[in-house]
Image (cartoon, one colour):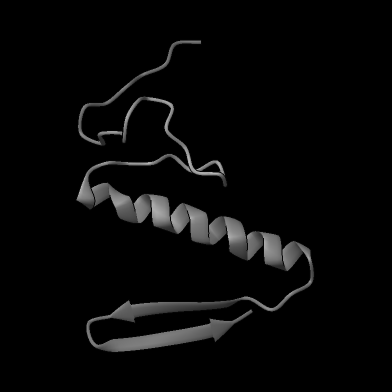
Length: 69
């Protein structure tokens, strides 16, 4: 299987830098939100599978909205 590596999303340290949750770690500030979203999604799905309530909050401008689900 051929692996394609793009120059724009620079990885921290090496091509195989991942969090404990299995999310790719990006060094660029622009791409760090992708790592954070992946980690948050992992923990939310784990909580759902365990039957726990998950609260998701999003901030747009000065307004924060939270939804339980």
